[in-house]
Amino acid sequence: MKTLVFFIIILSQSCYSQLEEFNSASSKTDKRLMLGLGSWASANMIGGAIGWATAPNEEMKSFHQMNLMWNTVNLGLAIPGYIKAKRANNKLGISETLEEQRRKETIFLINGGLDIAYISSGLILKSEAKSNLEKRNLFNGYGNSLLIQGGFLLVFDWVAYSIHRKRSKNKLSPLLERIELSDNGLGFKLKLDSMQKVRADAL
Image (cartoon, rainbow, N blue to C red; front, side, top):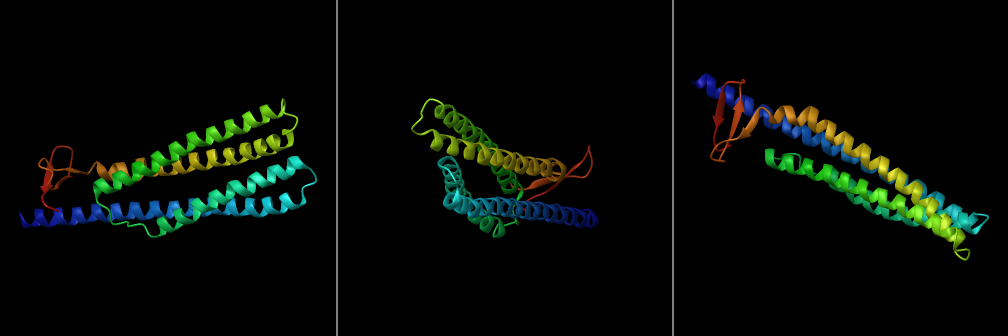
C-alpha cells in the first residue's frame, strides 16, 4: 500500500511538473510572438515616418502616414503583451491552465475576424477613391496601407493561433487524459491504465 501511495505522489508531481513546463513554453511562445509584432511595428513606424516626410506624392504620403499611425497602436499592444508574457505565472493548476489556453486561442481567433474587417475597410476605401476625386489620394493611400497591415495581422494571428492550438493538442491533451477531477471536486484522479483510476484527494 505504501508503495502504491508513493507511486501516486510521484506521478502527481510529474503531472504538475509537466503542466508548469507547458505553461512556461506557452509564455516563451507569447514572448516571441510579441517580439515579432513589435519588430514589424517598429520597422513600419520608422519607414512610415521617413516615407511621410519624403514621399513624392500625396497618395504615398497618406500610405506612409497610415502605416506610422497603425503601427503606433501595434507597438502599444506588443510591449505590454511581451511584459505580461515575461511576468506570467507558470505554476497554474489544471483548470487555470485550461482557462488560459482557451483564452489565448479565443483572442487570436477574434483578432483574425477583426483583421478581415481591416482588409475589408481597405477595399472599401479604394473603391470610394474611384468616385471621390477630391480624396482619391487619401483613400488610396489609406486603403493600400490597411490591406498590407490587415493582411500581415491576419497571417500573424493565424500563425499564433495555430502554434497554440497545435501545442495544446500535442502536449496538453495527452497530459489531461491522465488527470481528471475527482467525483466530489476536492481532488483529482490519476489514470494508471484504461481500466483503473487511482484517486488522490485534497491536492
